[in-house]
Length: 129
Image (cartoon, rainbow, N blue to C red; front, top):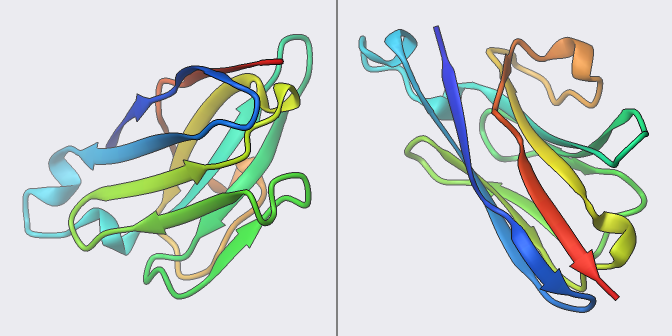
């Protein structure tokens, strides 16, 4: 099993920056496997709206994909340990949402939430105007 834990988020003024982190633990890593073997994505859900794709990164970190709404402002990255990051710059009020990290043991890059097996608890990001 993989347990995904998120951190970061909070309240920021428009134009500001935040960084979200996504770490993993669990029995899947006892044998020496690392989170770097999992494709990872970020999704967000605004109040009263459906959950939408934000960004994704392949297991190797060599490929990334972004929603048009965040291109040029958000950056997804991963280190060689067990952490994936979402750096969010030039934040706008419309970025306000609960952000979710998701992971799957897969070889590709995934933008559909149905492709992911493991989800974090969600973290609130609020951008004031």
